[in-house]
Image (cartoon, rainbow, N blue to C red; front, top):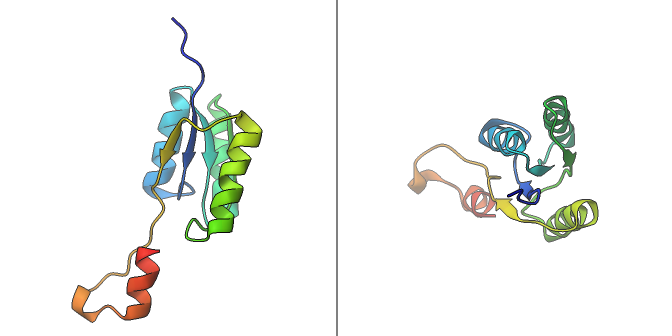
Length: 111
């Protein structure tokens, strides 16, 4: 039985854990929408996916901004017709003690 090709959005997949997730999903035949706040990083991951025989598209943007999220979903839908998998990997950290974290940094991490 052949399953249909899955479509995944992986946020924060221009590097690190997100990149590894995107590459692994692509190895298993999933079409990947690679998202990162650094568009060139997203493009590099798409090139890796394609070099490995997979299919992917880059969509740069900041997932803490609703207009970027809308564009990300619209890109996936217009390119592949649907989204089957969403990996909410994007995030930032501000290292240090919680009690010493500024209100600004706290809000930034939560967004």
